[in-house]
Length: 117
Length: 110
Image 1 (cartoon, rainbow over the protein chains, first blue to last red):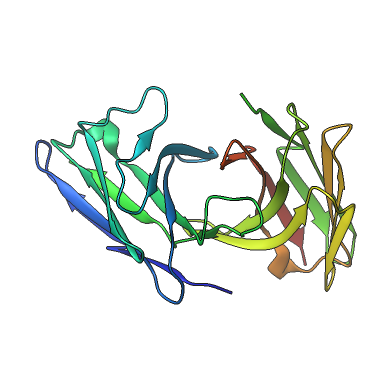
Image 2 (cartoon, rainbow over the protein chains, first blue to last red):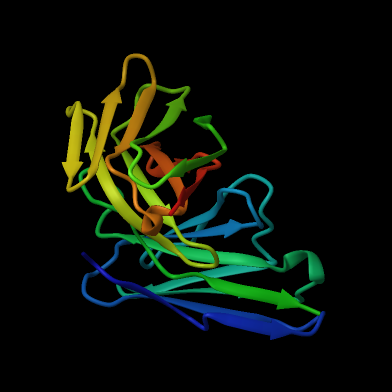
């Protein structure tokens, strides 16, 4: 199957700083990428959908000025958590599709554990 | 808004027993449904993808059925093994995005 990577796999940062997480599709071109957030023992919550070359579409309740998403190429999307606070500590997972349409499978990265102290 | 529910939330069985995991969704206008496995602290591994026109998909010991009209999918795992211990998530695809259930955490006792 197709491979999606994330970097870093875990990161610790101090409150008030910003942190960037990268998501790459390694062996396919991803027109559409997604960012999810998962709290302990809870399911994945979609944060935003990004299409290459376009602005991301954020889900209701997600602050777009706090979670900056860039999808500058068909193989790379980044999520920047700005002015991070302890409540932003979570497991962030990215996902990628060849296309937004239904016939394509969605592939997931291994996740990034963010801890804000 | 699509709501996906998984029952039970947790399941513990002895090795060799068959597993039945249930998933229901409120909006039957889905394009496909996926089952995933998640190990603790890890990302998701796709197990099976069922298109809306299909009734079931099989891969090895895994079989997933889909009944769109009733908004249900079931994942069957035959002859469970300790290595099957994980959280299993189902997700329905519509409106260009996947909506996830909360998962069923499975423990297979040796």
